[in-house]
Every structure is written in C-alpha cells, then in structure tokens.
Image (cartoon, rainbow, N blue to C red; front, side):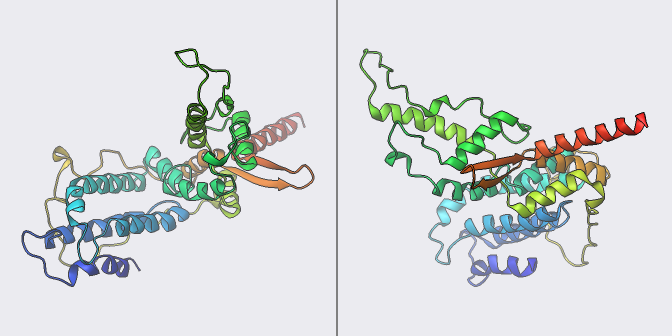
Amino acid sequence: MQCSCVRRLARHTSNTPNTADQFPSRNHNTIVRSLLRALLREASYLPDRNARSWIPQHITRRFKDNSLDKDARHAPLLESRWEAQLTQCRKTLLQLRTANIGDKNAIERVLHHTYARTGRRRRDLMAPLMKTQLPFSQTPLDEPTLSPLVLALLQSQMKHHPPEAARKNPKTMSGLKPDTGAKTIWMKPKREKALRKQVGVSRGALLDMLQVPLPDSEFAFLRQVSMDRTQVEAVPRPRARISGEYVADEFFLRRDSEGGLETKFRARHISRRFMQRRYALAFSQCPSVEYDKEREAWNVTWGSQILREAAVRRSTSAGMESLD
C-alpha cells in the first residue's frame, strides 16, 4: 500500500523528462521519494496502533498538499520553500526514530498528535465545534460568543485542571464579557469595533487552550490501556530491509557533526508499563461529553477524573485488606 502511494505521489514527475535547470529535477524527485518511504517506514514501527494508522495518513496528505501540478505552475514557489520543507521533513523523521527507540518525550508528542491534543487532528475535531455557533461578527456584543458545548468544556477544564503537557488550562473567561464602560486615552467611550476586537482576542486565546473531546471509541481505548497494562499491545519489530540498490545522496549520508539524522538518544526497551504511563498522561488530558436531556446541559468527564477515582478505589481496597 505504501509503495503504490509513493508511485501515485510521484507520477506527475516521472511522466515528463526534466532538464538540468528545471525544478523539480530528477535528483529532487529521488530525494522526495526516498524521504517519503523513510517516513512511512518509521511510522509503521510506532508503539501505538492508532498512531500507526493516522501518522502515515497525515504524512501522505502533507506530501500531496505540497506536490506540484502537472503544468508546474507553482514550481517557483515550491523551489523557494524546498530547503525549509526538507528541514521540516528531517525533523519529523528524527522525531519518529527517537520515538521508536523509546524516547519518552518523542512518544508523548506522537500520542498528542494522534489523540488530537495538538496539531492537525485537533483542528479537524475543532471544526464541528465551531459550526455550532454564529460567526463572531454576527453575534450581539452583549451575548456569549461561544456555543454551550464549548462553554461547558472550558468551565469543566478550569474546574478539573487536567495536566498541561500539551497546552495550558484557562484561568478565567472574563475576557468574553466586553467592558462597555472602558474609555480611550482621550476619555471617550470605546467604539464597538474596538470592544469586539478585544473580545475576539480573548476568545481566540480560550479556544487555543481548549481540549477537544475524543470520539467514544478512542476514549474507551485510552481508558482501557491506561488502567490495565495487560491490554497494551506489544511493540512491532522492525522488518528486515529488502536487499537491493539504495539511493546514496548527500541528504541521507550526513553525520551527527553535519546535522545528520542519527539520534543522540540512548535506546531503551518500550515495556508495557512504560507505555501505560504514556497512555495515562494522554488520557488524563482527554474529555468525553454527553448531553443530559433532563438538565438540558452537557456533562463533561475527564480522563484525569477517571484515573483519580480508580487510584482512590485501589488505595481504599488495599487499606481494607490490611485491616482484615
């Protein structure tokens, strides 16, 4: 599946011959294909099954978004961004490799991207929440500018204060209420446009801190692996490389002294207990929402609440057993 994806992404560059001064050249295409294969290969070794499914899809989508049209209309723009994109790809490849050798921070970063605590997937899950409310420019200034679901999530996040591993928690929502009595430096009342801008800045800051709810299936999976280490699956072993001729260009032959791809982290065994702790950190930042028809309000449950209650039950049962 990966090979067919690589061929499909590079089809527009292989159909027409390239000259020495044309972008992309054959060398550019070779580097892109080799880098894409390396990224997809490292993503297939990640210690989380959902990460092994979503990360390759995200990588493929990013490569498609930055690919050239057949008529190469955007070639000058992409040529100017070539080095910056290669640098970003090298950083991503390094992060995946450090995650696969057991680096704690790299694995947590992968889990945060996979379970929508940051990055593209978080923005995808935020989009439906934004559709449930009116555009900010059409909302009266004295009315709330956020939907009831978003307000419930923010209030619950302020109350329960989940870990701030991926993003900070909001401390107040007073910025959503405009200060209609505020005056300018000339002691004149502020215009509605200025007040609306202040509220918009506070609204954007709050939405940037918001932890989006996960789908029920993924929330249940994180709950299971966070509370029972026996449910954590074994890490896949790297496959043996296929013998053959490999691309040898300066991009992959750099060493550490020249900013190469070799990692400086010491490899460690990724045990079930180690992954359970990483899962628990990600789960504690995830909320689950359910609408209560009787109260006509949203109920928000955090992973940190569930883990805290489970720890209290374990300590209580251990104390009762010691008394017996």
